[in-house]
Image 1 (cartoon, helix red, strand yellow):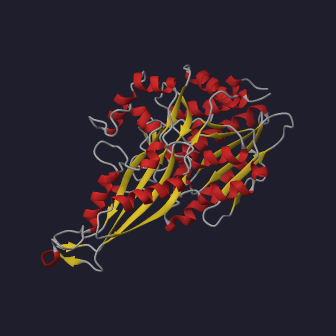
Image 2 (spheres, rainbow, N blue to C red; image 1 turned 90 degrees about the vertical axis):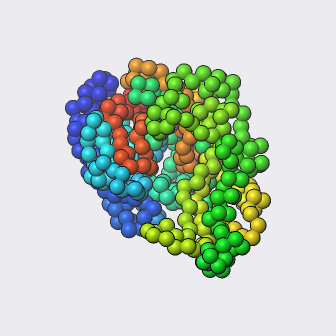
Image 3 (tube, rainbow, N blue to C red; image 1 turned 90 degrees about the horizontal axis):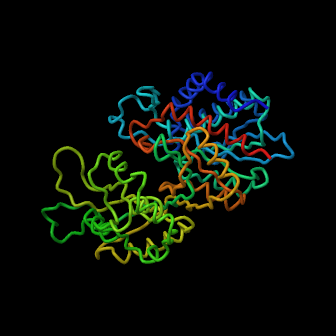
Length: 458
């Protein structure tokens, strides 16, 4: 077996080629939520399938679904070694507002030691560093050290319906001893972390109707229902300035953190609160001030408004009272809560708090369950040792505020521990203009994954 140093030397020597390949992939606008980019999503799937074949995976293939394809490959050459399932997603978010990008969102640009492009951090760069680690093993050792299965999806940013249907139907195909997901971030480039919990998500649309048609505000103002105003009242009743969410059943279901977690959050030894202010460019954090920021991000539920539509917003004036208005809202939920049950709680709270004189309808657009895992298992320990080996610092264990519903599904269906070892940074501005990924993180990430694979052998 080649040495870890030999593999690291290979990765350093070929990093420019890996980056060039990544730039090609990033240039494909694989926006899964926009139908006009369906061909681009297919093109991105074919691209990574061909890359897997080039590395040496036999029979890498795309799998058609009702929406966007999955990509699957496997390397099963060891009867006495564990099997690792690697997951990632090659689809990306829309780019709006496009005028806030410093460079075109699908013209990947390297500056200041970072790659700027939509999908750079979430999740194409993180997939590519894994593929680079796999290639280093194949080229330096002639084979991978363990059995590998790879499953990549093209609609994670659109709810992940296809993979959610595929996994329960194919447990034998996907059966593995552990799962690796590189789709999270670290606290700091000098402080690695491993994620032990993810919040669930519930994304809904609240539509409010008043009169049967738009009305003149002079003729009807003072007596006519205004759905936009009603939405504002409703949202404030659901979550006021204090940040407390007024859904009684949800409040009763919030888990109690461990003493160790609570102490870590309160002491904030990594100065997360200050870092959050710097990253967001704000002087104050909002929300439930009686809870420390890390608890608000990692454990507490959230209620956020993503957009309100209704009435007139064009240039000039139009004194109209709109007949309808709509708000898109989401809740991030503590791990292990069923988001579909939470939807019924939200419906109840909306009807209870809705001003009189209006009709309201809720639509559950998509939902995903949260996830938590005990850190004391062989695969998490191997990940921690690999991170410490490359970064020179032991990782901290963190709850992550984001949602990766597939992690919970893998845990439930495959009964395998999930390793959430991501290399993004808090200031990568994922889902926003000028998304980036650090070249230094790319280098350290591929070496960490290569080290991790070697530590899984029995």
